Length: 225
Image (cartoon, one colour):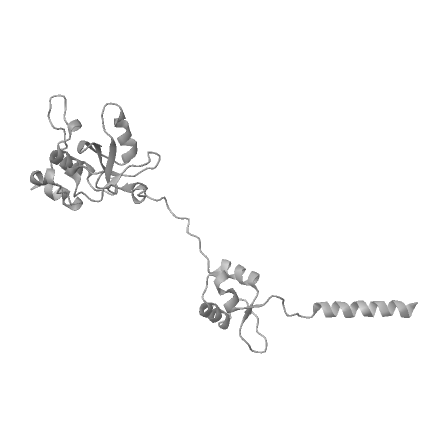
């Protein structure tokens, strides 16, 4: 009985000793196998292993081998940074199409960049907008939120499309640009009840103010020059 207990105890100790022996992990992969999965080049991953940074295994002095789970955890802890980002300016989002020749009144034929509002659910940021009817510009306006402002004209003004020049709201004088376009184009709805043109005070020559937008369509060429 004593001998039997000794035999079982010895067998259990032997089993425990064997279980504590280091074993070669399964699923070891080469740098070529795993580099793309951790967004590193093969040479970069190999160099990190050679310098002793990234966890890896070698067999008889051979090339480094990796366990993908270990490698991913190390990459996440040591190489990955998260940028929270920032709010995207609406003026960067040209969600509407560029105005075609058919969209563009003759007086705006050389104005650029010129876009057409095609979806009232999509904002278009800040800039100068033009309410158009057939081949005429009937109103010029400016706003930090073009679409929201332009649709307020649905009551009281007749127009069939909205074109606009996106101009970032970063200190540029939208009012002076608006005024220059109004004085150049003399739109129908930019006049008061007495027929007087309503525009902002003039700061500099209109030609110089409008030069960045390449204005020069046939109908306004003489007015600018």
